[in-house]
Image 1 (spheres, rainbow, N blue to C red):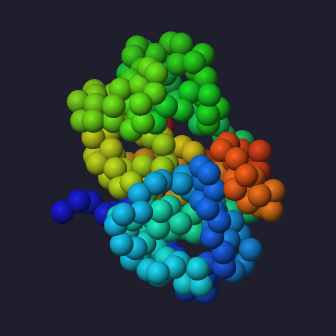
Image 2: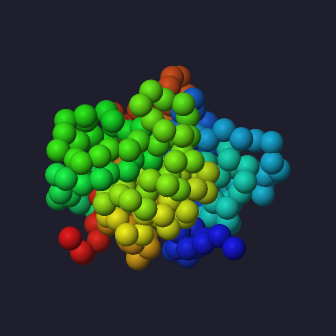
Length: 244
């Protein structure tokens, strides 16, 4: 049986007092608004051929919505993760470090780095960031120049010293296997889909680098109108493990 610990941890902390007030389906992003006004996002992942677990997540309590993190209807799973992120990724969270960038404090020189999802140009990462690495392997589910197919993860990740994983891997359920393959490496989860729940660090993750929505009304309009980044409507922050 696949390891569901990542999802179990997220579900275990969700309060009954909060419900999903609204769901917004954008071009690239799915957003959820909770009854306390907080807003979360997750990468919109296509795949609606499998029946949903629930007819709708709107109006349901967060623990019920958390069950849909395990849905194989990818659109429903995207909605569920957006709602969960509305709870965890708050600008006033006591657990976050708003100053830290994705690769701060990580030694890259001479390292073999694996990147799941081509994120050069995102999450404060540029080609210059990886100038001194020994090797940089980029793997992506979509066909992109310079990226290997994601099936290469099985062969490459066990060789890596540092692995950087897109948070959207939580939606398509590849994340548990990616963490297993990366168990001997330092691991960073990054992107707006990352749930910044400190208990996830117990799974061998070194940094959760996510985003908190700070301009919700503008973001909700923007994600419906066009494909693009949610960065102008949010702030980046991180939750870090104690080990260095």
